[in-house]
Amino acid sequence: MENQRKSHNKNLLLVLLIVFHGLAIVTVCSSQELFQVNSFVFCGRVENHLPIPQGGFSGSIEVRQGESLYFWTEIKVLAEGMTMLKSRGELPILHAWGYKGTIITPISIGITKEDWHNNRDLIQWQFSQLGYFTWRTQSQNTCLATGTWYVSVVDANGNPVSTPNSPVAVRPSIQIIQNSGGTDEQNR
Image 1: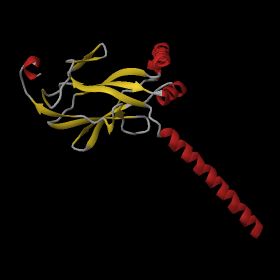
Image 2 (image 1 turned 180 degrees about the vertical axis):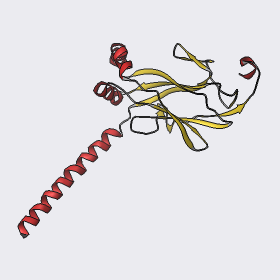
Image 3 (image 1 turned 90 degrees about the vertical axis):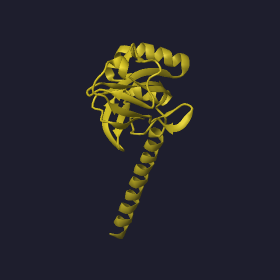
Image 4 (image 1 turned 45 degrees about the vertical axis):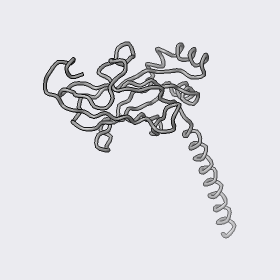
């Protein structure tokens, strides 16, 4: 009976070590950087994958009730992100729109299975030439209350993402001021 208990305890310890070792491997893999944010801007619209106006908005902006605000982003997908894209056929990326310290609208802006299927050859060619590839994407929000809004760029693991030149996570903010009338030119 005593030998069975010792044997059982050794087996349990071995299983725990294997499980712990597996978790350590998962943690190391998931902490690898999948992508970085090359550039980002709040803007009034997006045409041909570029923000309009070109320089975007900063500081504060007047918007009318129901008017859209876009957050445009150029993503630089690195080797780990390319590996995930090839194995899963997609690369999840989120724009998490926040207001008063709370995430209000998480929006999926990543590379979908359809995007991968339609653009695989071009993506793989750019990656083979540069060791990375870029992906331009955007999210749109029309439910904007007056106040400060921010957008966090988040990876597939729920981690905030930084730019190549800074370890600080991308989380720009903009002040929304409600305007009930006027033309687009007057408001922008």
